[in-house]
Image (cartoon, rainbow, N blue to C red):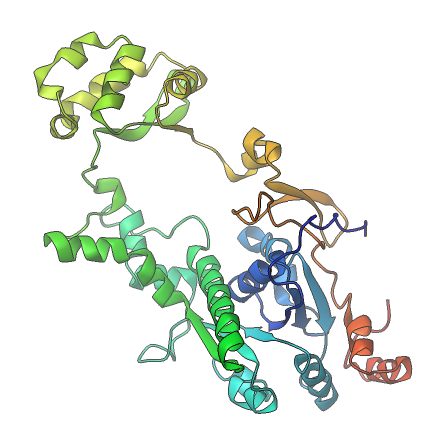
Length: 402
């Protein structure tokens, strides 16, 4: 594997913080990824056969490389007493433990918060679940499950056709809230000297996402319509099909923008029409106004419309496929995509955290680890000799030395 990218030129906020995570899929790994990107040493503990996420196909094929960059991998058989003993020695050096397995899994292994906090009162324990404790916490949750029961699928789809969002929004944001909780617990520990358990959950995350629609009902007494059927607050705020059947999103969201838009496209008759004087007038006129605009813009190419809208400071967006973003000039020009080596050796690029710290994007310090890549190194650091590690490897507790 090539050398990892050069680290940031500035110290990262969580350098010196050690995280031991027992996670798979998206939610738990996202929490660890955020902390790792911000400087923490994150140790991923996986079975000797490897986290099953490594082997996913289809829509899951990108999970492992994205959410496990900047981490180290330790492979241990936690069903064997020697494996649990080894991982407890690692946990003894940790500030944070993070997990996202089914309720009861960590308790069976003796790795739940109640057990570990007795060994180290400063330990912060982040638990990612489907539901926070309550009537639903026995249920098995998926992103689709909570989107359906939490109102997001209703809001995304057309009436009568609930539709999940096109990415793992609750898994990713649930992991982010787990990381935020860990950060809050670290700050609290500075004051009290004690750690605590942090809990994050998919369902509650989803409810937070649709809270704006709940509060719309609370304020207005009117239920929010699904997004495809909503009455927009703005008259021109839609996808237009133009020359060669290309599509582009165009928006005109103020009276000032309406004047600029009409001038840019020579729509003097519409600008002078008293029925279209204000934004609210134009919203009421959408039924006849939009067909006119679609007809008048249909002979323009998407690129021509984009150029005119950009020149005049009007909102627009191309309809972009995710794979097209690898070539996005803004992302490439600002360092938003970092070169990364996949576990199988192929080269690619990966999006970084969408923030800057002191003028820099927290970058890639380490490629996604190979299975068990750091097992021997880390167990040596907590007191194991090579002879002991050889003996454990012979019993299948950990991988043989690479």
